[in-house]
Amino acid sequence: MFLKELTELSGVSGCEYEVRNYIKSKLTDMGCEFYVDKLGNIIAHNKGRKNKTIMLAAHMDEVGLIVTNIDSDGFIKFEAVGGIDQRVLNSKPVLVGEKKIPGVIGSKAIHLMSSDEKEKALPIDKMYIDIGTSSKSETEKLVNIGDYVSFKSSYAEFGDNLIKAKALDDRTGCSIILELLSQKLDADFYGVFTVMEEVGLRGAETAAYQLEPDLGLVLEGTVCADMPEVEEHDKSTLIGKGAALSLMDNTTVYDIDLVRSIAKIAEDNNIMYQYRKSAAGGNDAGVIHKTKNGAKAAAISVPCRYIHSPVSVASKKDIESVLLLTKLVILENQKGEKHV
Image (cartoon, rainbow, N blue to C red):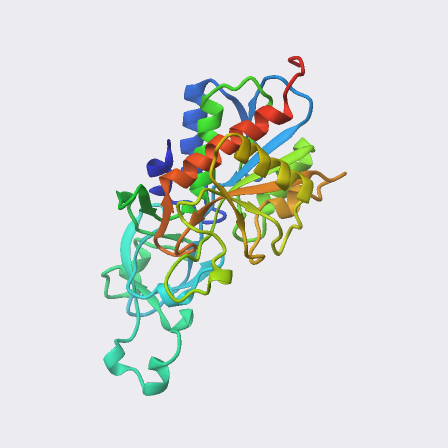
C-alpha cells in the first residue's frame, strides 16, 4: 500500500501538488494511462472488459490552514481551509508554505485567561502560528500571505492493526485506487484523484462531467464514533468492523438497490462490512450522481477516528475490506463483456 507516503505529504485543498506529483510518479511506474485536467484532478484509465463506465473517486486534498496576516511581532494569523474543529488546534505543530517552515499554533496561556474564556472553545481569531521569529520582517523572509499550512504528523502503526496519521480522509481512498490500478484488472474503470473536496466537492464535479459515468464509487475515510460516552445509536461506524456503506448523507441519497447489491457481494465473499449510521457530512458522490444525465453512486468508506484533525486513526483490516470489496464490485459490474 501507499498510505504512509501519501499521509506524510502536504495537500491542503487548493494546494494538492505534492500529492498529485507523487500519484503521477506511481502511475508512470505502473505504465498506467492518465492525464491531469485543468482543475488539477488526475484521471487514470484501467482498460479491460467493459459494459459500463465506472468512476472510482478519492480526493487528494486534506483540511488545513491558510496564512492571512503577519503581525508586528512576527506571529502568523490564519483561517481554516475545510471543516476543522477549532478545539483541536491549540499547541499543534504545523508546517508553513512550500518551504515547510516549522511552527506551532499558540494562544494566550490558560493562566492569563478569564473564567469566561476558560469555559469556551478558543476561536481561531485568538490563535496564531509561532515560527520562532521576533518581527514582521523576519517572518516575511520565510512566509507569505496565502501560504498553506498543513499539520505536522507522522504515520505510525500501533495496537491491533491500527494506524495513526493525518489526512486519512482521504489518502486511504487514494491508496486503495493506486493499489487497484497496480493490479491491472481485466475490467475497465477510471481511477480519479480529485481536488478540493473539502471545500465543496469541486474537482469531482468537473471530472464526472468529463467521464459521464454510469456508476460512481467513492472511496472515503469517514467519521467513526466508537469511543466512550457515545450512545450506541450515535456510533456511525466502528473501527475493525469492515467497509462502511453509506445510505444517506447531506449531499446524496444513495441508490438502495446498489447499496444492497454491494452488501451482498461482501456477504458472498466473507468480506466484513457495516452500514454508516450517520447522515451527516458528504463526499464526492454528491456531485457525481447528478452530473449530466446522472449516475448511480455508492460510498465505500474506511472508518476513521478523530477525522478532520491533526491525527486520525484507522484499521488496516478495514482498509483491506474496502480494497477487496471495491475490486469485486468492479469485476461484477464489468463481467461477461468483450474488450473495447
